[in-house]
Length: 151
Image (cartoon, rainbow, N blue to C red):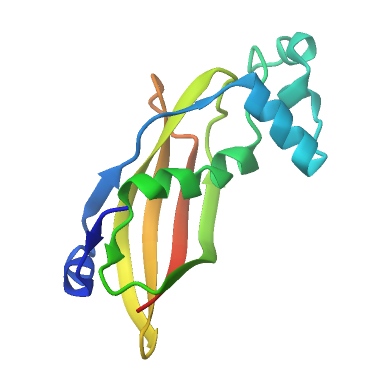
């Protein structure tokens, strides 16, 4: 994560702060996610059945794609040089727009949309995130993600 001043983070509101590296979403990752969540819907874990759907093959769970935001953020989210702790604060909006095919790659495009001091030394950062699918025009998902930083 890029380290900078709190002033620089506040000045970044309204700007794209970065694009993460590509992350492969292989069938093995999808299968492990299915095991972890007990979500074994055939479109995720049954290649022969999934091939008969409009998807043409297995696709990642939407929540798997969403869970990759943490990994994507590690590449681009700005953190203040006075950081003591950062925690996930939640999501205001999530929309799953396109399926991620097994074997596809995704990346996150992050825009800082708000920085507010909730309490002394506690800052709520809001990022608009677009998760792109390599080679596709339509993104996998859009999310407004909130993080709380303690300085």
